[in-house]
Length: 414
Ligand SMILES: Cc1cc2nc3c(=O)[nH]c(=O)nc-3n(C[C@H](O)[C@H](O)[C@H](O)COP(=O)(O)OP(=O)(O)OC[C@H]3O[C@@H](n4cnc5c(N)ncnc54)[C@H](O)[C@@H]3O)c2cc1C
Image 1 (cartoon, helix red, strand yellow):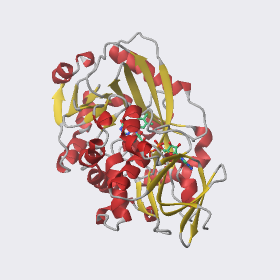
Image 2 (tube, rainbow, N blue to C red):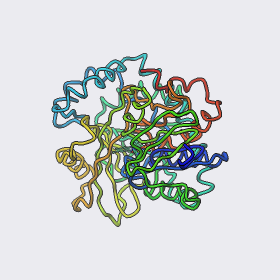
Image 3 (cartoon, protein in one colour):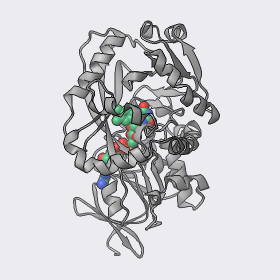
Image 4 (cartoon, protein in one colour):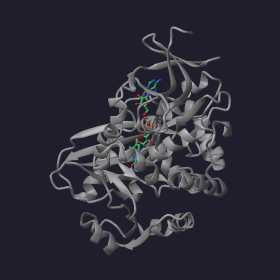
């Protein structure tokens, strides 16, 4: 093994999660190499809605899914669709997901998410100190949920109470207050919820690239696709697609929706799948909105970015290999045009792959079979928000100091 390149920690994947893990480990004096087959923020981290949604503790797997199931699955007017051709492969994930859609699992998962979200800003802060260009892209104007139907706002009472109990700051607004905050929403909302302490990024990809600057300066990023992961006495052996090999004392697996195959190589069978999501962008001189605004019934955010408006969201269960679904893009486009009265052309579209576990929690912590391998994937709708937190927790795991509640995110829960 003496011919291998060696490092103390290899981090696989340079999305927001892998970059944040590498940065936290570097800060604490570990020797780190970040391995990425494509480019920084090329995966789900590229095209998300850009919200640092520290209020997002309500899991996707929720009890109401049962009563809404027919509409969610069979209506073309639904923000949640299943690619039926993929059903046989999706069924095991879907069954586990439905198993989480009850009141007690919902509450328990929400509590874990709230624990993770609590330090969203605190755990980014040290990384931002080293990357002022990333800090400059944060806009602190809050995030807004705008409800189109009074019934839905009434039905949100349970979520509002849950967030209150979990210490999340929110303000319930009437239609006039929503319109006062975002005049473009006048006439399109019966009320809403403002999360005043939250922020968004003017450009999520530029933010992650800027965050990664210290890693680039120190030449800690390698272009490499990891295809093999094997246990050796001196560490974990990584085999790359181009034949290179690396021996690492510890490995952090942060490969987003593509992580399950490498975990399987050490014997961990993790039900990771993808919730496909889309965005469309309009190039606009006038921003139209001043903060991320979610027309709740449509399940996407409209986020003002630098020189453009991005509408990003919806959920499509399918596969990592299917092409983009034009119907999904039309769904978002029609709704944005309806709400904002936009006539401009769509400038860009994008399909991205959220890494998602059936219980809406990430897999975060050491592999049950191989303690030198730390998992950091499956952040579903919250990966951008949870980058800093995940990096800090991975560093805690490496030093054996992780909090007891993190056991809920262990791969051994499956
Ligand atoms: C439409 C949409 C809107 C969203 N909005 C928000 C939002 O507003 N706020 C929020 O917090 N989250 C949001 N998310 C979720 C968020 O984008 C993801 O949770 C997050 O980007 C996941 O980051 P990641 O680093 O785990 O994965 P990714 O960003 O997908 O990165 C994984 C990286 O690993 C690399 N990789 C994989 N396998 C290998 C390998 N074998 N070898 C080398 N490299 C490898 C990939 O190339 C990729 O670059 C949204 C997602 C979508 C799709």
